[in-house]
Image (tube, rainbow, N blue to C red; front, side, top):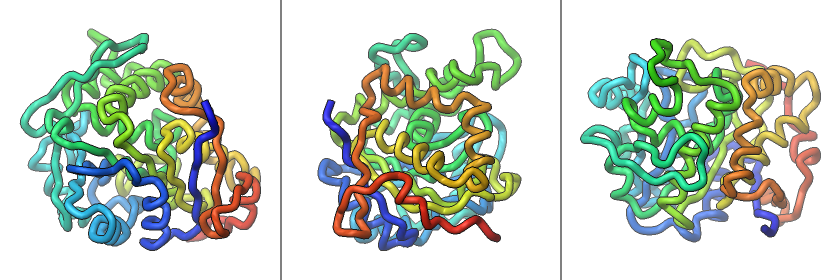
Length: 311
């Protein structure tokens, strides 16, 4: 497989988001699902709503924000609760579809060792294209949450699919599956979705406010200590997430320590190796600096001027 193109900007703004999106949106057409992690109520680290609103207005007209309900009881456990949280968090500027509101649908998983099919929100198959617009950050169980986690957990429905990923059969512990096995199950769930959309899917990761906690922890997220980096985009899933991880590891030790510790203690790197085994993209990529005439840039140079995090 030839090297994938991963586009990069340091410009953390609506303009930067649009610039990267327009590099990777050639196959986005028809009815477009925009998969966000919309977060628990008042979460401080989610992608700024105004950035997404401007992107949808200018470049994804008619795009629908899609989500599924959570497996745990909280502010997004039922569709009613979920829509109220979306309103509180300011995402109601666009159409919103809680995809498992009216049911579920099984999609095939090809080549997996845990699943032959995965349960997703029923209305996901109403869309022609998928934009995974992801807040890249840490995750309490996944180590890191990139495009793979956003799709694998975020498109699995709240009662069946997420249970298949997280809970060992017969266990009373909702979170009885962890570490490498969790990474593999989550990745197989992602594969069901991206195989469904084929070439009509693209991936954007926003490396901003990267707490070691996921946005599902809302106001209880751990304080951010990792510097902001920028925005990356690719039509290759593995390359997109691998580039973000590489950018984190290329930082100075004192800047990367907390996020690397979270990734490694949860065995998060298994996401990347298992995506490669399942042929969900390539880990060989070219990082393209959109701020400097689309020149190739190393991950080390991309992060050499990052500013240590301050509140």
